[in-house]
Each structure stands twice: as structure tokens, then as C-alpha cells.
Length: 503
Length: 130
Image 1 (tube, rainbow over the protein chains, first blue to last red):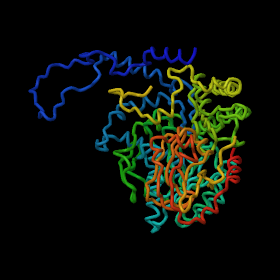
Image 2 (tube, one colour):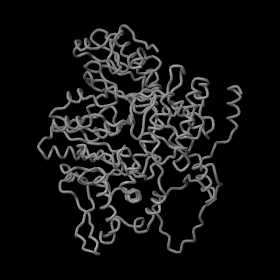
Image 3 (cartoon, rainbow over the protein chains, first blue to last red):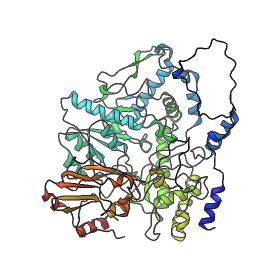
Image 4 (spheres, chains in turn yellow, red):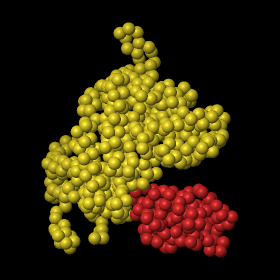
């Protein structure tokens, strides 16, 4: 078909799914309310709106509309989802059953604590387990997301220095291989970011670190393993250098899936860290939420944890369980969220940890690392690997070739969709050109990893033999290649009335 | 791949150029930088009258790939910003050394320019990173 013919035939196609406003008919309803049997109270005229543009649809119209839309989605329940740095592992359905137990699901956060002892026991136990896994002294479950946990940790570091009479410590060191949220967190707390470069091996440049360490340093934020998927080779030296100048060490625990039962941040010398329960402990997090980012601290920072935290008010005795309660740590940075964190996520993470036990969690990490290294090893002759070394739970490769002019990481990603896979993370980390960050997680079988590898190898060949196949991909999805520049520049945020968009 | 590196500009390691004209100078992103950012969709411009410090960020450029800070190659006071970038941020892609300039500054210390790279050194700096 010529371009002109394509345009003409597209113009006559109905939309993939109409807006809900374009479904139904005037007067159609989903629910018939009974006649009112109480006296009518009139609102003042000036508060009454006449005419309200709402969809007029039946229950079936609504159900079909949203089920059809949901079928355009890609999810971990439909396929392999190697989105690096996001740990899109399968979420066991048992987690959902537990979160729906009435004692958890129907509890109200304002209930008297004596009536929600089960929920408090779960929080107390989860705090203890997360402390054990991290080698830290205590945990607060308050933060509602990873970046929220970072924010808590940096505020705690700041509060510690102020309590010690060192308010002039206002700089936080962040390596360029850190998660993008790390510098953003530092800026949100009002401190200054000092970015330092990585060496040729993907590790922190120690000479550069020594140069920036002085009495104005509050601490350092570091992601372990880093966003290149590699375990920081100089971690002991880094901790010593930063502690040596009086700074504290923050670990971004987003990549804990590579460390469970293998290494404890507390024993590596970190002072404070956060978990991403939604990544490491399998709580669902597609589309941006809900998250859960508990913060764990060593003895030094324990008094500064955000609160309230779950505590034991009266010890148990024999068959009598302890009496659980809530309290504020003595020098707490305060509340970060209404009530007690994203409680439903806590129940799911608790279930996951209980289901696996210690040896099971260690096996999670071993399989996650094995899967990542297996895929990396099988792709290394077809894709450039910026670092020739064993990776953690994820690895980065480059989506470009000198003999495939004009093919970019984005084209590889779009073409993967034709093979039925969710693309990896693109163009991140920024320090690797044409980055594709691949994280298979432990929940994928060897067959699933092999199918993904075959697709990647085929695409590497297609890039050279038939690059247009990649440039025009995806071909088999409900929506083809979108114009990202136009989408970023011409924001259409309002569906009704539909704004005139230039053709 | 060869990127344009005009001989009348000086270059910072962080991929900004500066072209001096009397005691003022225009600053923008290099051809190498725009090529790696790909399509620029938004530029967060500073205000006229703000001062910039060599090596410190004065604005942000967003592309379809990433948001990146832009660093001042020299210190001074901003005497003009390229408002055309509000509507046409893609000028940074199409004409990085011309219509895609970002700010114009009044230099506070012309001596700072000595530590910047000339075109030949910068071209080498680009090649080394490929």
C-alpha cells in the first residue's frame, strides 16, 4: 500500500474503543433508584447546577467498555515483563486472599488498638523481619513508596546531624549510577546534591569520592546493586571514606531482590535504607502504585524513625499473646502519612515472606541472579555489554550496532512487543548509550527466558537485515508506533469536549 | 559519526558550548549533546538577571528520553534568554549552535574560558565516548 492509501483506510476505521461518552444513549441508566420517601431539601439556587455532562450508559455498557480496555493492557499475569529496576515478579494470588481477610480488609485505622491486635501483630512482626533481613536495628512501615522511604531516610540523616550540633552538613553525595529518585529526594529535603562519576568498571570513582568528602557532607545515597545491575566493588572503602568524614550512608534498597539472605546492608556499614515491598516482596505495582517503602535504620538513627511504629506494650506470657500498640520513636522526624502506611501492601509482603521463609528468600535471590546472568550470557555476542562482569538481578545492554545505521534501543523495544514481550527499561541508566535494562526476576522459568532470548537474537539479526521492520514496529499491537515528540508537546488532558488536534 | 564543532566556540566537558562576542557570550548545547538527547520537547529557561556560576546547573532540557541539567561553562549574569525555545524547543536539535542558543551572559571573569576545550579537543572528547 502507498502512504496515501494507508492514510485513507485509517481515516475510515472506527476508533479502537470509543470514549465512554460516545457509548450509551440519552436517558440510559445503570441503576434505577427508588422514589424518595423522605422530605426533599432544596439547595440554594446559586449552588444548583443544571446540566451535567455525564455518560448515560447501562451496567453492561460500562463492563464491556472497561473489560475491552483492560484487554489492551499488558501485565505480569499475561506475560514476561523484564522491566529493569522495577522487579516485575509474579504476585502470588495467596497474597490477595490474605489481604481480603475481613480482619485486615475491614479494619478501620481509627479503631481502638485493642480491637485490631491482629493487624498490629502483623505490622510488628513485619518490622522485625525487615530488620532481620537488612541487618538493621529497627523499621518504620510509614513510607508509602520507595522515594517516600528515601525522603524519610534523608530527613533522619539531617535530624541526626542537627541533634549532634552539625547543621552545616548539607551535602549528599549521589553517584551517577544511582536511581533517578536519589537526587530528587535530596533536593526535596532541601539539601544539596553532589554527583560523582563511575569508573570504567561501573563502580564509584574512589578518588573523586575522597575529593568531595569534607565536614559539609551529610551523607551518601547509593543504590546496591546499582542501576547497571552490578554490585559495587568498593563498597567497604566507600563506607569507610564517607564515615571517615562524618557522613552517614544511605542505601537505596530498590534492588534488594539481588541480596536477600546473601548480604545485609546493616553489616555492610549502611546506617539507613528503604525497601520497596512492591518490588522485592511481590505486591502489585503496575501503573505507578500502590507502593510501600519501609525505612530501616541502625542504632544510631533508630530514635529518628518516622512514626508511629508498632510496639509491644505488655509482654505476653505462655498462651497469653502480647498486647500490641503504636508509639512514636523518641526523636522521630514525625508522621509521613495519614495512619500506618499502605496497610494492604504490608499484608501481602508479610504473606510473601512467611510463605518463603529464610531459605526460600535466599533461593529467590539466587534464581533472580541466575536468570539475569543466563540471559546476559546468551545475549553477549549479539548485543554490546558495557561491562564484562557477572551481574546481579539485572543487566544493561546496548540497543545499537555499528552495522545497523539508524537502529536505536527504542526500535528494539518496540519490536519486542511484536514478539509478545513487555519491553525492558529504555535509555536508563543514562550513563550507558542506547541502554536496555533487563530484569527477568526469579519467577520466570527457563522456557520463558529462552523464548525472550530467541526474540532478542532474532531482533539483533533483523536490525541488520531489515531495519525498517524495527523502525515501524510494533506491527501486531492494538496501537502502532506513537509519535512521542508530538505526544510530549501537544498534551491532550481533557477528553470532553475533544480538543481540535491538528492532523 | 562526526558531530559539528564550530571553531569559534569553546566547549565544556558536560557538552555545552560558549561563543564570546565582546564582553558577552551565548551558551547552548552541542551537536553531540542534542544527538544523544534525541528530540528535545521542553526547555526550562532561567530568568534574565539571574546569575550563573561556572559548572553549576542553570536550566533543564527535556527530550523524549530524559531530562538533563544544563551547566554554565562560565560565570556571569544572564542578559538574554532564547524565548523561541518555549514554542520551538526542537531548535536545539535543528540548529544547536545558531537558533538553538539557550542563554546569553555577561561574563564576570573571561579568564574562566581558558579551562574550556577548543573545537579539536572537544571533537576528540566526543569520539572517546563512543
